[in-house]
Length: 208
View 1 (cartoon, helix red, strand yellow):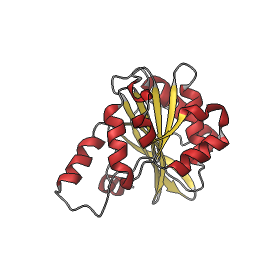
View 2: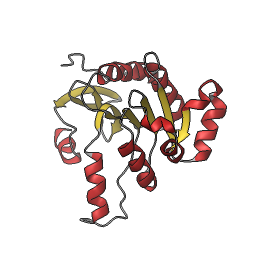
View 3: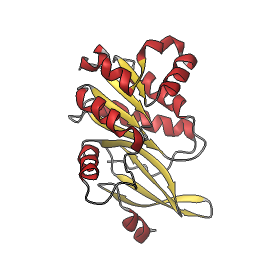
């Protein structure tokens, strides 16, 4: 387990921590992982490309986006991997979805993308990383069939990296270590407690 209970000092150190989590996850029996960096001002396409470069050292890697506009922008900005970039829908229709020895990175799937993202994920048997996925839809009623379907789908994913400032603190996770909670005092962060699983809002509130 992790013994160095410190938050990264900047984005570069955070990305190094992310790499520390990605490498061992490739050997894990689970094949669906989430990576979540939740603070303002991040350029997520650059983070996605960083993940791509880490994984592409030894793997055939694809990047998928919800919409054609985002995919086209990424193809323009990264022409050397243009043929590796798809939308969720175009990846479903490609032969690559049958490539079980490959790795896929999905960028920022939202609740409105759930149907196409779920179909792609269920048909793809390679290792799948999702950057900042969001599947909860507050417009769906409690106890509905759709909500239960989403909950079942979400349970198939394991987080390997998480970093988020919260009220009076911060929460971090680096696979395969525990979740770490930090308390903010005078603009400095101090380690408060670790958890085997992601703590809920009530647990965080009690411990801060």
